[in-house]
Structures are given as structure tokens and as C-alpha cells.
Image (cartoon, rainbow, N blue to C red; front, side, top):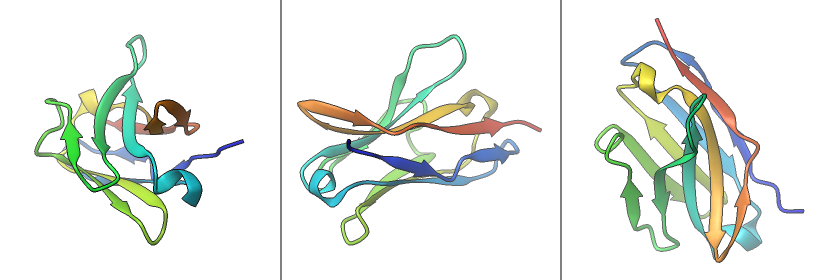
Length: 114
């Protein structure tokens, strides 16, 4: 059973920052494209950002310039730095590993509210 373990969610005021982390088994991390998705209540799960094994990144238009995805190959961890958070960023955030097959984390709640 492959486990992706997210951490770092919480409650933050609009304009604030959070950093999400996702610990990944090494056998998966070095071969798989890593991504962050989110799902708000009543909405479909959507891609937020992803990063290839060689560090090429891709962002949703709604977070471009505010969020940064990165991967630490020594720690087998992928991060999502979220700045200038808005109420519409409120969602459960999921870590994802993809290489044809796909693995998901359990999700971490991010709430942006004053």
C-alpha cells in the first residue's frame, strides 16, 4: 500500500501564507510526476500545480504567481508554498503521484477566512 502523507493545512486569514508538505515513498518519488489538487465543497477536484521528475512545473491560472510547487529529492517530499491566500482557495488539498498509475494522499484542509 503506497502512502502519501500530507501536512501543513490549517486556518489562515486572507493574504496569509501556508506551506503544504507531502512525504512520499522513495521508490515512487524519484519516478513519478508529483502534483497538488484541491476540492472545494460542491465542486470537482482540480489540479493546482504539478512538477515533473526534472523540476518542470505547471500551475492552474487561478494560483499562478501566488503558489509555488517544489520537490526535495533528498527528503522525498513535495511542497506547495501558498502566498496571498484568498477565501476561494479554501478546499481540501490532495497530494498526487502520477506515472500512468496514480496515488493519492488523504487530504489536508485549508481554510482561508477572517
